[in-house]
Every structure is written in structure tokens, then in C-alpha cells.
Image (cartoon, rainbow, N blue to C red; front, side, top):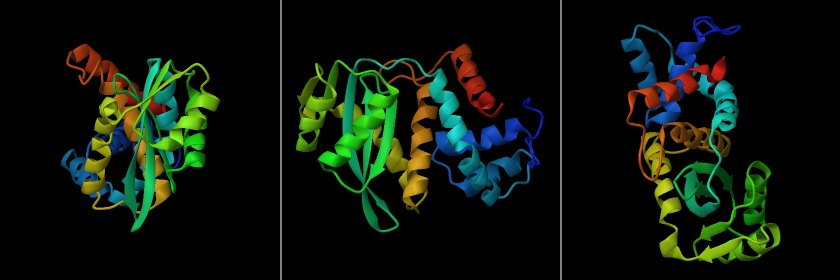
Length: 227
């Protein structure tokens, strides 16, 4: 499949679908905002079609980007935040490395020991055991880290975890843009790929791609996620 050929049972080529899915997960735009942007470029596509594209191809985007991402540092920052989904309170667990690259997000109902074990299991299945794990003063982390990450230094201090705290900001902006999250499944799906897409354009601590060649490589990686 090439960028100029439409996937089976789709009217638009891969390049258009990739761009719409990328815009939704990279910027704080709603489906209706993207519909207007596509219409400005001469493509008449409804916001419901864009929503179906995001649902159908988001997992493929995430898997392809994850294969191309660089190896994370050996220092992780773990943190959690409250998210209201359709009037119900959920806990969003997030892990980033010391340079701000997002490792994983996981939406759960609780902030207890069992929830911490589930989150750590997801991380250790995808990445090697880190040298240092920095968390806030939540006590649910202590025993799971000791049991599952032997030899890992656990630093529990609120002031040391600003890297993870700052990583929550894009989620709050997206939540404000969408007015509210509609379902736990959509939250997990949307935020999981948001972090991976942002990782493509981030370089170093708190910096973003500035060279034209670096941006070109990042855009090319996004376009070829469906090929």
C-alpha cells in the first residue's frame, strides 16, 4: 500500500487518513475542528468519519510508533491524576522517563496497591527494569516496586516528581477541548496514542524538534503508520 492508494472500503488515500488521525492526537482539536480543516483543504469528510478513522487506526498508529521509539532512560517518573469520565471519577496512571518521553498511561478506578501492580506489570512487559523510580508519597507504590523491581532505587518525594506532573498538562488541555471525556475506553485509546505521537516530536529535556530535517523525519514516520 502506498500513500496515494485508499485502503479497502475507504474513499480517501492513506495520506489523508493519516493526517486526520495525527491532527486529532497531536493537537487540541475536536473532530468537528478537523472536519473544518479538511474542508478548507478541499476534502469533504464528516466528523463521524474522522472519529471512525481514529478508533479504527489508533492501535496501528500506537504499535508502529512504539516499534520506532528510542530506548527510554533508566530513570522513570510515575504519577497519577484524577479524570472525570461521564461524571464518574477515574485515576489515570502515567509513566515518563527523565527526559519527558511518555512510556505508558493506564486508566483505572482505584489508587491502591492492586492498581499499582497492574500498572507496573504493563510497564515491565514493555521495557527493561529501570535503575531509579521516582514517585510521589503515595504508599501504594512501595511494596509493588520492592517486589517487582528488585535492585531498583525508589525515591518517594513530591518535589522530585515534577517531570511526571508536567506530563499531565496535555491531558488537561485535551479534556478542556473536548468539554469532557465520554467513556473510559475512548480515554485510554486517545491518551495512549497522544503520548506516543508527542514523543516523535520531542527531543531532549523539555525541547522540541527545530531542524527541518528532524521535523521531516517525524512527519514521515506519522504518514507511514498506515502503510
